Amino acid sequence: MQEITKYLIKPTVDKLGEVKAWEETIMLPTYETGENEKNPMFLEKRVYQGSSGVVYPYPVIEKIKDEKIEKPYRAVFLENYYLKIMILPELGGRLQMGYDKIKKRHFVYYNQVIKPALVGLTGPWISGGIEFNWPQHHRPSTFLPTESLIEENEDGSVTVWCSEVERMFRTKGMQGFTLYPDKAYVEIKVKVYNRTNFPQTFLWWATGSVVHDYYKSVFPPDSMRFSITVNVKFLPSRLLPERIISTIIQQALTFQNTKMYLFPLPIWQFYLKFDFVGGYRIRTSGIIARSQSSRITREKQWTRVAATLDRLGTETLRMKTGSI
Image (cartoon, rainbow, N blue to C red; front, side, top):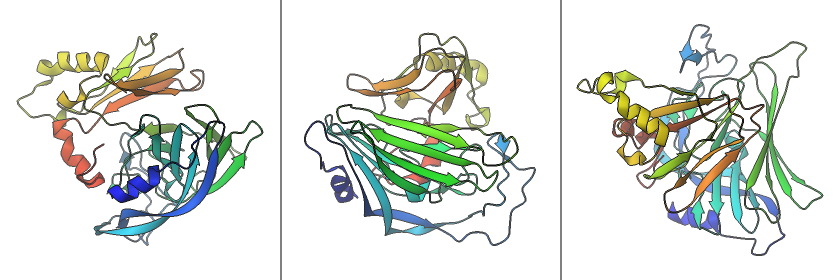
């Protein structure tokens, strides 16, 4: 896997003012999924992570194979002097790899293996990169192929579009990844179209992940309202909520030294006027996500695998060479 990663991050653009995009077939270590369930699942009353668990007309997959193989994928690469990103249209059009060529590091978590677990709405779900979710919860088609297109813009930038028409409500969603010639960031534009004659509701969100034991989040200065969710059933019986409430609040406000967390901790921020949220590795570097606060009314940050009690749940998503 290390040799594959070395090949993927190898630079092909070495001068300012240039942006390059291309398609390429690559081989990635993969644990394949089983066959689609042949019978339709009419799960009208199913609850999935507090949301609707309806999946029809999507098929459900209920098995992940145990043997790892080398599997070909159609990847789309986008690169300038500063960054190199890899998009996998075959896996929901996700940004699978984002590499900082100057710092020589992955600026989003890069999982070296495609190792799904049965935690998605229709079954398979993988960790890492940036995942785009709509029209509800973790996207039903997160493990299904999308169409893709490379677009060269007049200002010298290049955009890679991934697009699909989802089957549940027949709406269309697109995400466009743009690199500019002399800018060290990737811009992601999202478009959702209602192709029907009727109003359609939807939930849209992106899941990006980073890895570091000592990571500190940056909340906008107008963050005055938070919502903290703790599932007590995952806590040892000797740790009562009354005894840990102060720890929860402290972690929510500082969100640092994640290696010491005892349990997964999700934090929602509401009613934001500033347009960013982010974090950084203490004494090194970090990442900032910027969006329009008039459209993105809330943000969520989540600590996961650093929690000792949560580690077992992540072993099915990675190899021993990586973490989430």
